[in-house]
Amino acid sequence: MGDADDLLPVEPAYKNVLRVRLTVTWLFLAMVALIARYALADVTRFAGLIPIAVLLIGLAVVAIAPTRIYRRLRYRLGDRLLQVVRGWLFHVDTVVPLVRVQHLDVVRGPFDKMFGTASLVVHTAGTHNSIVTVPGLTPGRASAMRDIIREQVRTDFA
Amino acid sequence: MRRSLRSLGGAYALIAYLAVSGRWATAIIAAVAILFLGVAGTILYWMRFQYRVGQDEIRIDSGVISRRHRSIPFDRIQDVDITQGPLARLLGLAEVKFETGAGDGRRPEEGALHAIALARAEEIRALVRGSRSAAVAPVPAAQEHAPIFSMNLDRVLLAGVFNFSLALFAGLFGLSQTVGQPLGIDPFREEFWRKLFAASAPLENFVLTHRAAGVLAGIVLLLLIGLATGIVRTALKDYGFRLDRAGMGLRRRRGLLTKTDVTLPIKRVQAAIVASGPLRETFGWSELFMQSLAQEEKSRGNHELAPLARPAEVDAILEEIGWAPASGDFAWTHVSAAYVWSFALGLSPLLLVVMVQAFALWPLAVMFSAVLLALVGVRALAWRRIAYTVDGDRLLVRSGWWRRRLVLLPKVRIQSIDYRQNFVTRWFGTATLQLGVAGGRAQTHIIPAIPTAAARQLREDLLGSIR
Image (cartoon, rainbow over all chains, first blue to last red; front, side):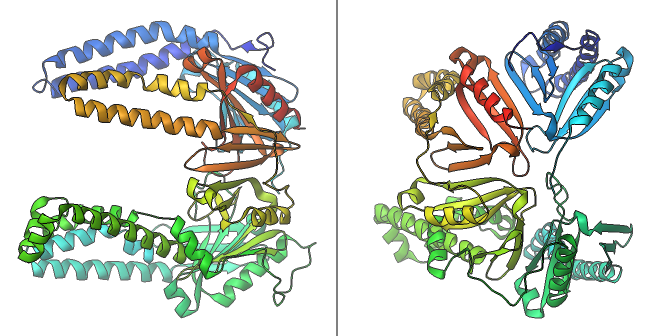
């Protein structure tokens, strides 16, 4: 079950989605840093460093993170289970048996629409992992996976 | 009504403030206004509240400004809970809550009828149950078999002793910080005590000269209050606890001032948890909880089936619902010592703090390192108890030192399995398995520090049986 060969990567366009999303987040943080700089100007001498630090970290994150996240993101749709593998520093490998799936969504956010990707969102009944997401798929592949999984679902909470 | 009174807490503080700062007139006017608004609001709500029990649904129309028409089909209702507060019991009324098994308990009041006559409430429950299980013959109400499990007064009091609680002080602290300030009562400031003692000079001299005795008396008082609080709270909650079989469920009745009568459908049970603690286990007592899809009032999805029971009684309850017993010789697999070492590694940056303190104030450094050592020590104690085993078609996980738990989880109830590793545990060669189970809280089913190969093997084993 843990074979690296069967695990498929998602679409490369997902890297761009990540980049745009991270850029937006860090722009927001940069604004907050500017506000903090002026608010704390009297409190400490180092207030001027805050926006610079945030800017540098933000640039580093947007340049490096998307590629690394993309490389570590893998998924596999087996005949009885769905497996999603994410991360290296904090590695999480989730397996959901298909018969336990509650319902499925194919979601396209604004950034997804820009770059032609979609996410498959799988809902389970457990309170942990109640939502398992496979991001960065092509819309066609996501819909195909949804249909395949729907055949297998057999939850009985009578 | 109770809820709306409680939500006016802020208003009470305002009134108290006004009262003590001498503005009596304003305070009285504010109190009267709030009382009037509260009563008027409640009356309006009740005038506009209607419910109707139909052929196969309950219809509830409610709301003053924004109307809500809700229809709950009997099929969606898992069961009907009947609760009676002390005042309601005097008036012969009850509150009826419909359990609909929604996942996270985000909507606890899917349907609730307040202040219904008790007889009518029981009628509604019989009706809902009757229509749900048309194939099963309804159990005649007159028949009362022996309970599966019950607690007499002695045991309730004993449970209270184990539930030693200093909650009273937390409450008093909160009170002193809000209402106490304007009234000048703040036990956390020295002047308060000085003024108090100044009022009786002999007492003051006595206390000052016998400091040690004073401290001892204080500790004894603390212990007594803790015991009393625990006993009172447990008696109020678990008085007259009894567990009976009711058709396809377990019926639990308990309570002193507020009586509750809840039925837990057996088929909805996801996992069983046998909980204990160092003191309880020494005397051979434990608690039994069921994690279920139906909702529980207070403990977020874990129904308490036995607040204090012997292992044999726990096994008897498990047998009643068709599960294998919890006690017995199991082939436990322990987890790696990396559980302790990775934690110690995580705490090691704090050693820097200790070193800084060693230069400045060395007593502080000693205290701080003692705290760090204590934390690692407790973790090591917990590590020795953590173990798991696969027993036929279920998984057993044992964990914890202070809060001891034994989780009985049938394999078919596992919804998902996470294999987790971070950069520290990877270096130690271990991983954590986190299991997704319906109901209950999200963090509860974790097996830490399993060697990677064994972890993958265990996951394969647990999921392989799911068809």
